[in-house]
Amino acid sequence: MSYTSFLLIYPKKEVIYYEEYKNAHGAAAFVWSALCNKYFGDEFAWLHNDKKSQNLWDLWKDTTLPEYERAVLMMTFDRMCIVKRDFQRAIDDITKFQVEYLKIYPDRVNHWNDIAMTIAKADFYTDAPAIGIYHMSVGDNPYTHWDDEKECEIINEHIWDMYAELDELNGNE
Image (cartoon, rainbow, N blue to C red; front, side, top):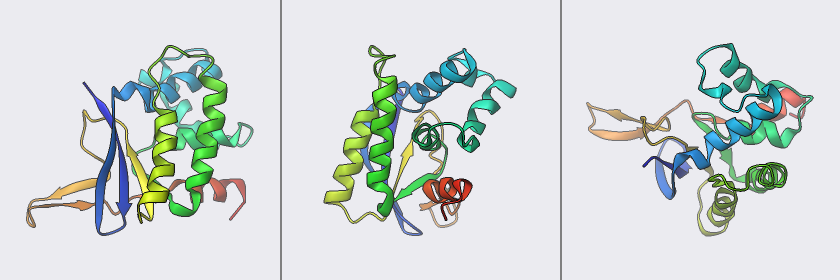
């Protein structure tokens, strides 16, 4: 079965697997389906490799949408990170998302409450300067890559701060 991994990120040093959630459909796919259903009337639009799926990925740029929806969507993007100063903000955004969507989809697998609790736990119990979420175990982890010459896994240098991107778009630099 697929899984979603919660990662502690130490930039240019290491990525540590911290928590794992069985059945990856309870993380990114839950968000994608909920947003596709709300905005496009087709909860499976994200499965199409066409304009429908691109419309979903572009929702984060739509400043008319609630910021918490855009933030949680961004949390599903490859190589995003949340830096320590924004851990509480992420927890708040996840909570708002859950208030709206958990009542609509009460019987679906949904890891977002666990993810919010894990962010709080990482904030309190670790010195990790950032966290990331590797959503789909069926592919390569986008946060790391293998260097055959050094025979080691190293951090991907293309990790980006999602709240910095969101704040820049919103004019909150």
